[in-house]
Length: 374
Image (cartoon, rainbow, N blue to C red; front, side, top):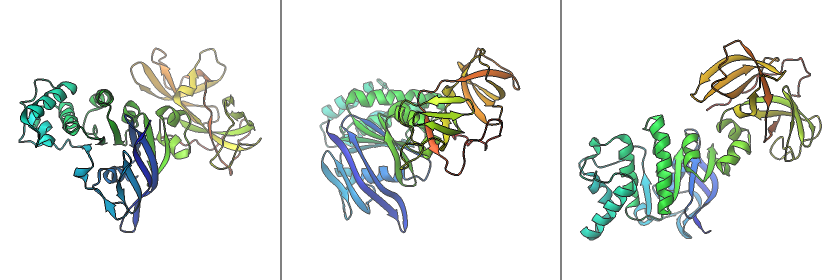
């Protein structure tokens, strides 16, 4: 499959401050990619560079093999055949839905423009709504109009800048699936920027996790969650805690809860190679790695609980004082302070080297674990 979008060595600065610091990635035709990261990581700046709104200091951007940006050269945005969907929708309040969608089709014949607008209204589920004005629509409907307007000129590429951040959580989740279906049905290549991992997982085929102007890992949602490349990705994607551990051999690591067998050679840190016996590590445990089991002799105290409908997310305190998370079906409704049976069920062992801290002997309280941020 051909690369539709290619970025090589992109650097962008504002004065002496480097915002994007050598980014490379490629997006195949018809794929949906996402730049995911916290505020200030450079993801929106990178999107603006792809759109042509900003020049780049170094590197090269190509769309369908055509160079559109390099140092000292920039194809204007209007000549890139790139559609843009903004966070605030940017609809024209004095134009109807039909007029908003058809805005980028000026210069085409009226009949052709009308046919294209009607086709897109049907595609985004707004058939019969063309005569309304933006203020008469819900937030989700306005976002659909913005998407239809971006699709109208049949662009080579669609860029979406935090497109669902103004919507409530339930609508955001539903619309992200709907927008993915629309883009896929149209065969459109797209790049999404968001700080919300749920949006990224719902929409994207591949995700680049960004921090400090760099892509920390470019991968599938599955691999980002189960095979994070470094501690930042592990901490940013999903929930979990780190427990101190000790490597028993190249395929086994021991933590307070027991021994974990790894299906691949255990890597305890970038560039350090395969761990050796006795190496101190921090092992990532996700909420689905800790399974509730009434028959287990291994007990943990319920510290906190968050009811989520079908599930309850428990925060559990181990004998050592360390805390872990466990996602349990909600019919197992335990009281705070209750001790419940747990066991490990880990398919992917994720561990990072801790050279200054060895695994403590049993009965010795380890250093408190680092909690994941959402």
